[in-house]
Image 1 (cartoon, helix red, strand yellow):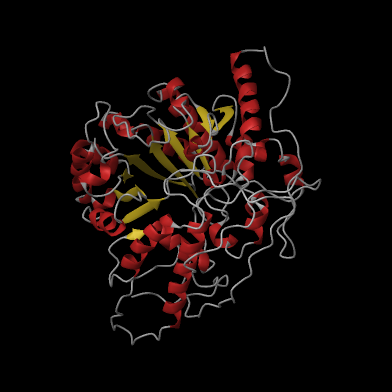
Image 2 (cartoon, rainbow, N blue to C red):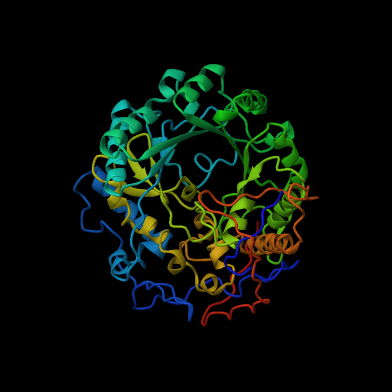
Length: 522
């Protein structure tokens, strides 16, 4: 039965079949003031222009330093925001405190047994994987464990989350799969005994075997699987290096995983407009996933997603077809993280996602060579977009917090485009996923390339939540037709309050001296 709705941020106006796109997707010139605390009275000023970190006349002092300087130049050319416009020291002085890293992605393998045609690691803008060792060495694992434990102790973290990633992490032998997690748990237990360590492995599922599942379960490592749908026709682009389809092997692995629910974290699936949304959703349910992550394709203003066109919302239409089936299903057959997070944000509840809302980024990636990077999804923007120039040997995770790329993703509203800051959906949308805001030569201070889709999706879900809140509650124990159980976020309680609703808001005015961006052909 669907729970009563708590009071939170006012719900936006109901969805409009043709949501208004942002009237302006460019920013004015940076102001001369540092970023300030959020204000409800007016849009926030841009942070001042200023150099990024580690800039200096180091060329010629060695290959590593030369490469770092080259990377700084690349960042400045491709993404002036944040790399030349954000002064991190000024932001700190203005009250923006860093948030510790809580999720650590360990790239235990840099190669994959599949060659999916759309993979952001191998097929998009960044080809840095070519320079990475195929596997993380025991020495790198030990150094990563030491650095993670150091960070957990320094910030009294109650929990850190590890994600074993790749490439394909299951290319490791069963006996080696748990080594990184065991090393981190041992180091954290010594340095920060109150910190709990959770672990997940993200895999394409083709190499799941009883032996690997046994080893993972013994180490307390849950398994998430990436798939494009539950039918062979959905997965034609998930092929091996010889062009052979990988679905049959993935399906075998998923059926095996479904028999071990204690190890099953869920399935990730990227939205594909060429596939029927209901068929895709129902086909995934055949694998009994405890959760389904529906992801928007990694795209941006310079490389827009398939079907992108002003005035259309094809991705919202696809997702809302699934939402309606899920919302009115009568029983909760699985969790859909995207929908649950939108609902939580509408109600003012905390979430942990970086794809929506204003939660500060708290993820670091450790590559097989021990380099420290930002989130993998940035690799879709430009060559080296995730690079920081930092390594486990030379930098701590506290130093990563002052890197402008990560600091910008922890600024909340102050990191957003002016239109986003003025939008009534900002607390829910948060400007959208950071990589989706990118435009070459400007950087990451635009609304999401999926802005119109997100508006429509959020408003539709808000209307559904509002109707549920206003529906008279049945007697205890009575079934509710068409209801699903949408739990509150972990650590919160749902109260029996109705949801306040605002009147439709006027579109924010266009910012001065800016033009509507030209349509980009898909």
